[in-house]
Image 1 (tube, rainbow, N blue to C red):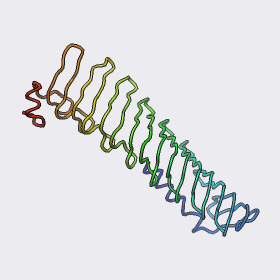
Image 2 (image 1 turned 120 degrees about the vertical axis):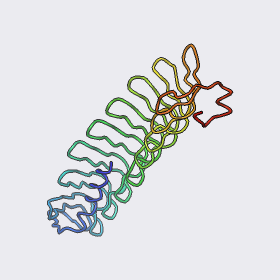
Image 3 (image 1 turned 135 degrees about the horizontal axis):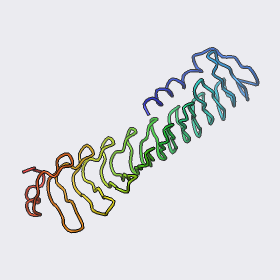
Image 4 (image 1 turned 90 degrees about the vertical axis):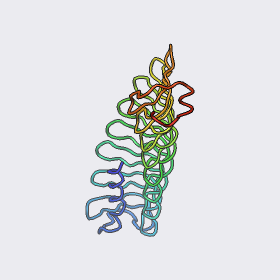
Length: 227
């Protein structure tokens, strides 16, 4: 995502600072085609000497087709890169903002809310390996409440922090057995219960390993300590 945003920042200022020539139509107030010194091309609606309305901006390694306001990407549009990455959705002041879809060249796909040019708010991320995350995002990463579905059938329901399982959550295995309790850095860490078909293990975990077994009473009396 960082590379995409860096490229956007580069693209969005080009036509304001380079020499240009109107090669057809009206590039002030009408419909026209502008060729820039670096060979970028804008073709579409113009107003007051800026792209305004609908048009297509063709860069060396990407193409934007959609709505403009005072020279900025504003409204609905589609931005395609030559590596196959595509964003379709809303723009505001040259950034992804609002509802949209981002498809990466590796096959991953995000559908949901954007702000400040990044995944922010509720959305669904389909990973190229077949996994799936549904929930809240902050600065491009799962954050807060969400559900992570593994391709192999496992599922995690709970809290996330900077993309990792953290806080209270439940990890459900393919056979229906599950761990419910505390997580940190994507692993079982802290107090929890491992519920199997024939028994329940109550204890304290460290980096996915059961460190100590408690009774219900011991766990309640000593909930956050390893011993």
